[in-house]
Length: 393
Ligand SMILES: Cc1ncc(COP(=O)(O)O)c(C=O)c1O
Image 1 (cartoon, rainbow, N blue to C red):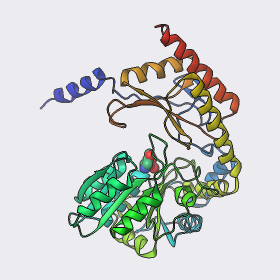
Image 2: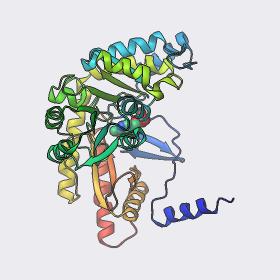
Image 3: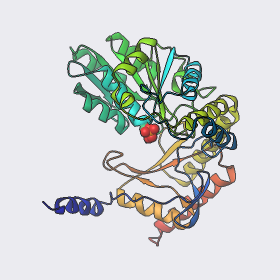
Image 4: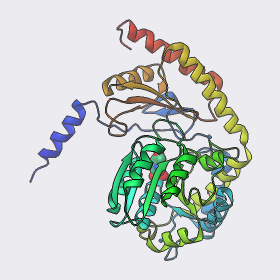
């Protein structure tokens, strides 16, 4: 048995301009980063509030390590559930206005664990066709009947729900769509789901911290209660600037996850020092509304600049502001042309996004300045002119 087959698949991926390569970051996360020996102005991290390298978060991590050590040491159900984890869960419950919260080590695991604890082959799961891969994988793994509805389309969802005779109906959606930046129509999705006696699960990985008056995400933005969104997921590696994830909901939901979510039960708890760091970032998320105001200013400046340059943007009010390119090879070339001008934005290609919709996923952080947005716009302008002239962009 040789690996020839694998080598052929790798070659095909390279030929289709879909090959992935890692870049080595030599600095902390921030607007300016050092990558593979070069300095870049970066617009592609999910550190939307600029907390990944914030001094108070770093200090809390160090204090946490001094008190609890680095490793969780065991799973939560053995002896890996520290006071730091417990306090963070209680603070996140207060923040989200839900009865209880359960921490997971990553968002991917939170989604796999929650969906699989709630549905099995007697049930049905309904997913937006642009949902994040972790949600799609969670649904497929559960064995529940798997259906995708049209993007952010409550009518399309309603049609599928009304035809279903499944025992449980779980509707799953991103809150802010990770690759497009638009916000799900949660009030309507919730109404339709409840009308058909289903449960709505919202993964607001990209909404927490950025959306809502106190950073409470899409449910805060729309004012949705626990009955309207009974399963609420947040991740900590994006707006919160640390790592890990949580599920928020009722006492019964959280006890169900503790008993049945395999990705909760059979894994080491997140580092307690990271839990302490996240407690500090949660305080900053809530207290510093200027970070959300700054993001809104940067987004406005970028969108009006792009409009003048003739770049096609998507309908997004969030820090995710993708520039649609289409062809994967073209997206790679524009990304490389920007890199040559000192701007780091990676090209997002299939299968992360649908075929023919490769894009530059531009993201902003509250740590960016207006002058840095202007530098990005100047580089986009120069790349556009070079390409129009058929030059070596
Ligand atoms: C919508 C969404 N859900 C979940 C995840 C996974 O979260 P994590 O990186 O914590 O595994 C991501 C991205 O990473 C995401 O974009």
